[in-house]
Image (cartoon, rainbow, N blue to C red; front, side):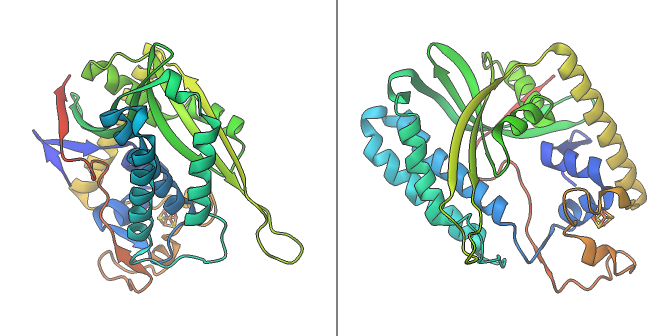
Length: 305
Ligand code: SF4
């Protein structure tokens, strides 16, 4: 458990997991376990992020005239992330979320947003932060700060296989983006709001049983929040942190059966179904993988509220 000044460090992923099931939080963030069978969706999402990070960091340092080098940096960072994410875990090979499709999508993305070079300026990229609130330390990483047509935005990249319109509606209530919007204000980054940079990738199997040509779509949707949204966000965060503190103090990690099949089958079901005392489980289908939202970033901005 990471603490500073006696306060628990918490980020969006940890809070969301704790809110869904405290036992799941225990497996993922206390024992650092992930199923040996990896998620194709998460691997694709991380690789997509890496493509965009490599691209926009080169544009930030050298401007749009360095587009060629930016493409090279994007490809090399994307490839490195794909290989890293693929190592140590197994993946279903029969899936359309491949590295080749990610590369195609990146080229398509640049074609779709070809006017960016006239309108978009990269202000900063991949900024990690730790903000000390009265009840907890909020950790996070901001993807990209941009100026688009003279207006500043925090851009957050999201991949999905669902309809972008459904996802956009969901993001308007997303604790992650409300928290990041609040973080920008506290850190003094003047932003109009959050621009969610969606990339949708879907494919269907044909009659022969192989994946058809994937559909790729892109959309940027603005999200604006109010003080009430931020107050609600804080109240819920603090509530979850108090729950977690109680779990750590008493070494009790309640199972929430409501969550076992909420978005498909929970990956930790093989552990929970063993009904063994904590620490005596059979771990053959799991590996250790530590989560750190601030990884890949050397400098972390610290602020106190
Ligand atoms: S299987 Fe159910 S109880 Fe166990 S961690 Fe997953 S959601 Fe929680």
